[in-house]
Amino acid sequence: MTDGKERIGFIGLGIMGLPMARNLMKAGYTLTVNNRSPEPEQQLAAEGAQVARTAREVAEQSDIVITMLPDSPQVEEVVLGENGVAEGLASGGLYIDMSSIAPSTARKVAEALKAKGADSLDAPVSGGQVGAEQATLSIMVGGSEEGFERARPVFQAVGKNIVHIGGPGAGQVTKICNQIVVALTIQAVAEALTLARKSGVDAARVREALLGGFAQSRILDLHGQRILDGNFKPGFRINLHRKDLRLALEAGREQAVPLFATAGVAELMNSMIAQGMGDLDHSGLAALYGQLAGLD
Image 1 (cartoon, one colour):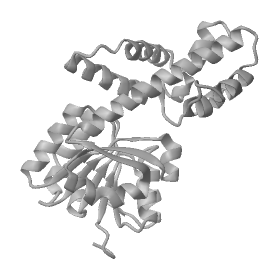
Image 2 (image 1 turned 180 degrees about the vertical axis):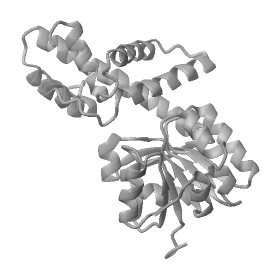
Image 3 (image 1 turned 135 degrees about the horizontal axis):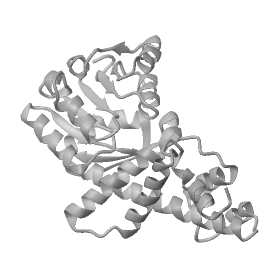
C-alpha cells in the first residue's frame, strides 16, 4: 500500500473505464492497467499509471483488481482464463467487476475466486459517460459485507450513490432492473415527442410542460433534450443497452418472470442494429420512431 491506500489494478479502459481509472488516480491510488487496445494504456501511463501485459500481471501487482468489460464472456476470459486475474490474485485479494454481465456469471466468478482465498464483488454502475467522468456513478453492489466495506473508499472515488444490495449476483440483478426502467422510459419519451411532432405541436414546449408534471424524469430532461436536438452521439450505445436487455430477458426466463415491455423495446433496438444504428446513443430510439412515423 501507498499512504494507506491499496494498490489497484484496472482492466478495461473503454468509454466508461478510462475516466473511472483517471478518477481513482486523482483520489491518490496507485494504478496498474491493462486494455485490449494500447491507446488508453498509453494515456494513463503518461499520467503515472503502470501498464501490465496480461490480466495475471495486473493481479500480481494489485491488492484490488477492477474490471470494466463489455459482457459475460469477456469477464470469464479475463478472470478465469489463461493468464487471467484468478492466476495472479493473491489470497486475501479483492476482485471487483463493474461491468454489466449475467448474474449467473457473477456468481460463478465469485465461487471460483473464493476457492482461491480471494473475495469478489459484482458492482455494475449507472450514470453513463458523464457520470464516469464526473465521478457521480450510481453503484449497485453484490457480495460480502466485508468486501463491500473494504471497497467503499474505492467506490467513493468513482461514484456517489453506492448501495450494497446483497450477496453475489445481487448487483447484477439490480443493474438489469435499472436497464429495464431506463429503456422503457426512453421509449416512452421517444413515443411522446414523436407524437407531438407528427401532430404539428412544438415538441420542445411539450417537454417543458411534462417536466412540470407527474411525467417528469431525468430521462425526459436529459434525453428529451437530446431528442429535440437530434444529438445521438453516444454516451451509452444502443448495442450495449441491447446487450443488457438480453441479460434481462435471460434472467426473466430463468425466473419465469414475463417481461413483455422489455422484449418489445429490445426488438426495437434489434431493428436499429440491423439498420446500422447500433452505435447511436440509446436516446436514438427516437430516430427510429421518426422514421416509422414518416418524419425523418
